[in-house]
Length: 144
Image (cartoon, rainbow, N blue to C red; front, side):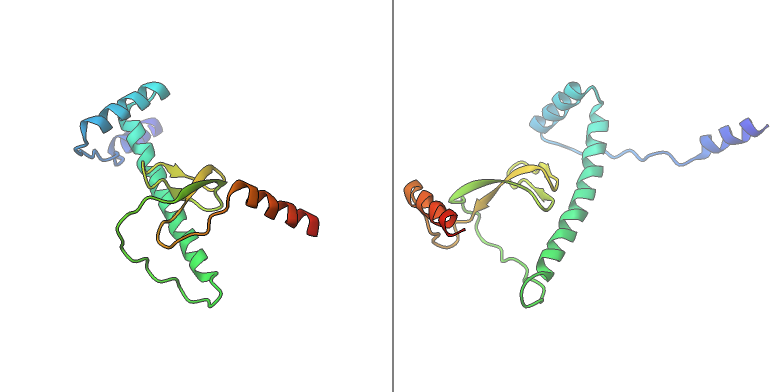
């Protein structure tokens, strides 16, 4: 009798909801290819991507808030101004200390993963040739 009750409860338990959406043809193909590579269903790939994205976005928001509060004056950072997207002057490889999202493909970049940071072309940056950079590094080593 206990088994019947538990099976009845399982039959009446709320099921996952079905979500329909339209995606571009190239995204559908990417999803199918990725699902095949991983041995999963397309719906499983989409479900996992959505679940992970929301977790990562929460982390990004939390990390951003913490960074804003670490500023010297302890006032929250202003909301960034909308500006025309410009190409960065360059990219620097790094190990991420915060969660991030790739600006080009929206890939999730968890803290601790390899990534690159763009040096924005909003103000004239200072550039060094490799020889001057080497001299600066050697000078720094000699001071230690």
